[in-house]
Length: 406
Ligand SMILES: Nc1ncnc2c1ncn2[C@@H]1O[C@H](COP(=O)(O)OP(=O)(O)OP(=O)(O)O)[C@@H](O)[C@H]1O
Ligand SMILES: [Mg+2]
Image: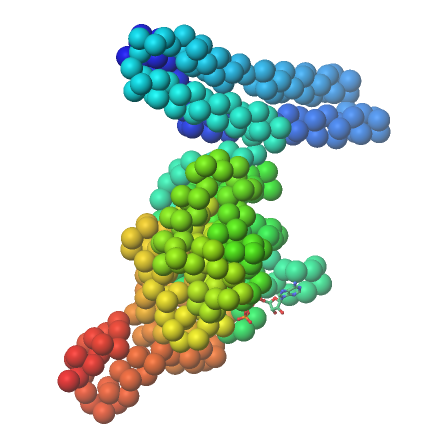
């Protein structure tokens, strides 16, 4: 291996460096915007003689400093240097070098080009594309969330607080209009809380960090027909990846892998309209998975499916948690689904009235009935058996129950 290539490999910039740069740039940009805002506000006050010239000068000074800091980051040269370095190494290779060296050097050059392209794009979008770090293991923390659609309407969410840990599968149940879909819209940032806070992996979600925070999340809706954009399954999954600027060369593999996770890898060239409801929903899940979000939200994603499709999608949710380490939140009217979950959130009239394991929640059958919720079929059978004086242990599946009785 030539010395120059070795040296490059020991100093080269990585994906992490570019992401750190984006974060730094984005923060500096926000600080600069904030300082500009302050300047505008104090100027207004000065015009109304509410503040002194000296106070204005202080704000002007801060604005200048923030502007300088921001511009300095924009002038960052290291990504260009990184590319120059490897370009030179690549050029200076001679026929004495082995083909392995040539190959390696070319690979490094491609990587450096990609990082430089990312750098140029991130400067254009002020670092908005940065991926946030996971600062802790709490996938979603909701603190005293309040929301209403209009000031003269009642609260649709009223003081909702909960924590969902990374890797948990949580179902959200509640009667029609209890605020479940509104909650999912707040989680994905389509709506903003009137008060209270949301954080994802320890990152506060604010208007400024929304674009970045959203990358932690993917959502699958009720109607599979409304989720298609592409003319083939492959084109459909590709859509989100194109927005993410994935290299065309890597795209096919990422699409294939995402489709494989939901068992749709042999349908890539099919037209979405030719698929069954369950298959369409699986493709919708693959489209979300291709972007590899940490948290997947399903808003009644099984409600329009036939029993087979319904079962398939429920199995995928369990698989997402068990084998892919994803955090899954499923809003559902299907009371049998909650048996698969780690935790259940029970909503009633905009409030979270219960948060516990399926067993804890199902114990309170009368309470569930009082807020117009059904009890899973399995629990009904258990209840009926108990009434007959037949004592059995709680089971999580019909098979378990059957083997207990028979
Ligand atoms: N865009 C909107 N403007 C005004 N009110 C709305 C809007 N969307 C929903 N609501 C109201 O907010 C409340 C909660 O609605 P939401 O859709 O969150 O309930 P949900 O629990 O998802 O119900 P469902 O089980 O029927 O899907 C309802 O009273 C609904 O009428
Ligand atoms: Mg809903």
